[in-house]
Every structure is written in C-alpha cells, then in structure tokens.
Image (tube, rainbow, N blue to C red):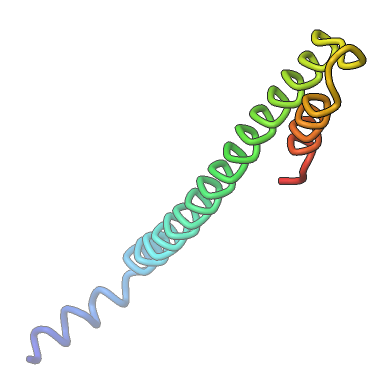
Length: 96
C-alpha cells in the first residue's frame, strides 16, 4: 500500500502530469458537449426536412387545384363540380 501511495504522490508532484490530466478532462467534456449539439442539430434538421416536404406537397397540391379551376373554366361547369373543386383548393390552404 505504501508503494501505491508513494507512486500517486510522486505523480501528483509533477506539473506536466496534472496538466495532462486537466487537458484530458477538458477534452472529454468538449466531446460530450459536441455530441449533444450534434444530436440537437440532427433533430432540428429532421424537423426542417419534414416541414419542407409538407410545404412542397401542399404547394404542389394547391397549384394542381388552381390549374384545374383555370383549365376547366368552372363558369361552364355545373355547380356541383364547381364546389368540389373549390373544396379541394381550400383544403390545400389549411395550415400545417
């Protein structure tokens, strides 16, 4: 037991060993913080991608309905079909 105590006391007396241990602790802390930031960023990127896909999907759906309205000349179409197309347009304008 005495030899172990002498070895640890001897290591503690060397400033380079203490500096190396402090550097290692700081490095490990920085790695943990970086991993947490990367995880948070990945989650944010996933949410952004979902919002982008939904926006593109909704935008294309709205364009299709508007093109259908313009292409069909709804003033010439029966009122039953007109309201069905208008319902399609308004459903694409609903919020996310």
